Length: 388
Image (cartoon, rainbow, N blue to C red):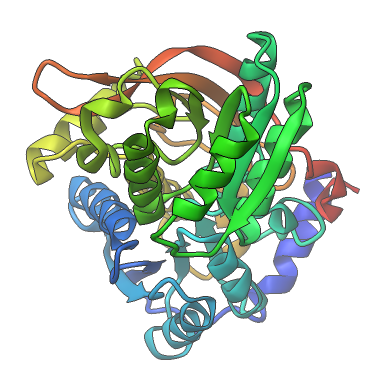
């Protein structure tokens, strides 16, 4: 199997772009404008911190991050990616919050032979039939985190759940993942518009349906707007809310104390007891003055994964095969602790139950309550051609 991956990787070398011999160029695509820029800033700050701690170098070579704003639009993200490949001659592309943006940039980046590292988005397609030797993730496959929440709610005999998510690739993956492990009744499955800010009609429908619980995936600014309106409706005390990527370090400052006690799930938390994580959280707060989020943690990991690849080939950026082999080993100090890559280059990792609390210094954070899944694999790796 390893030989097959290596053989496929060799095919990419001929297509690889011209590399600057003395500079490692990393193109980071994220959302830096509009309401969803709240996540983009965290992603940028995580990457910048990692490069700062590497003293701006990878195996003695100067390293730089070139940022591109996808503006929350797949077509813009693709244009940015093409520009980075043709004009900037980047050696790596990373970042990407949104699954529809990642699917849009996949073809131009991977077909060029450039290594693509997703620091957030994890669409099912890239875990399965569209997997590639030069694609890696430092986050998760979309379905996995809601799978963990579905498992938790099933174990606690919660039934009759109302589901909601934005109508795009990740939203559909998230609800599919939840349903894969949740064994109770689905009261409704509702998809809202991307970037929607008014949820009054949807909240009225929830009230009429009278489910036992509500499960939502509303990332970034969408989460802030939905949570504020849900809390204002008074339904939280009647219909408890469970979520993924909705109550985060990014959104909680705007939501505040009303979220205390709510449950979420994730593969990272600020309080994971690993040396690399403790250092990351401490350095991030000292540098930026606020609590890092999972997006920042994953972006930080992405830069360190890239550094491990460059070091493994002693700065020979033309050695794509060697860099891919090194990345496959995940030989770097991840903020999530030790993990390994599955055959499709998505992490095999733990997923935790998180509970919202207020820290002694006044920050609202998701605190680790326990492990839901140990060494969890995504549902699509067997469809990946690299497993054949």
